[in-house]
Length: 229
Image (cartoon, rainbow, N blue to C red; front, side):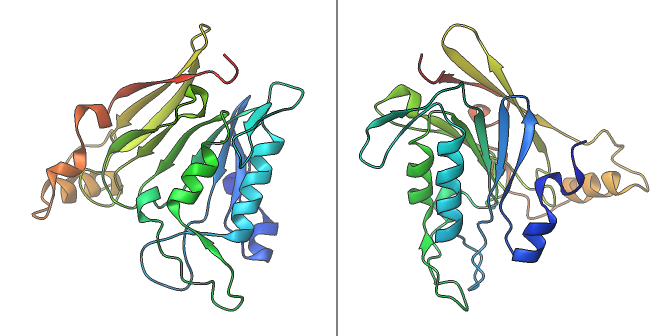
C-alpha cells in the first residue's frame, strides 16, 4: 500500500508544501503537484519554488533531457520514468495572482506543459478539475518529447469512474500507457457509501453525458517513443 501519507511527509506539513514524489513501481516515479493558488478562485497555477523543484527533480531523475534552448543534455544511468499528477488541467492553470504573504511568482499551465516536454522520461500528466474524461497528446516535432495529458472525471458526481494507468515497455523502442476506467463493485442500492454514490450519480438530473468523453478518452492504449530510441 506504500508508506504512510503516500509520499506526503511530515516535512511537507511543517513547511506548508503540498508537492512530493512517490514510487509507483520500480523505475516509475509519481510526482504530485499542488496547483492550488491560495490567493483564491477555482483555477490554479504553480508557485515559482515548486516550479524550480519540479525542474530539478526531473533533471536529477533523467538520463537525457533538453535545456531551455532545446539543446540535448545527457547523464549516466538509465533514469526513471515520471507520471505527473495535479488537480488542475493545463488549461485551467491560468490564475496568476501572486501568492498571499510573499508575492511569489506563479506559472501558468502552458509553462508547466512546456517544462514537462523538455524531459523524455515524462510519460503523462494526469489531472482532473473539469470532471471530464479527456485524453490528448502534448505534441512536439521531436517524438521523444511528446507525452500524454490524461484528464479523468470526478468521483463525487457523474460519471463517477476512476482511471487506472499502466506502463508497458513494448521492447521495440516504444512504450504503452494502458488507461482503463473502473467503477466500484457495489450494488446500485444498498447501505454502503459506494452504493450511495452510484445511486446519486444515476439519479443526477444535472448529469452531462459529454463528461464521459469519446471512446478515445476512455479505455485506450497510448503509445510513446522510448527515450533515446
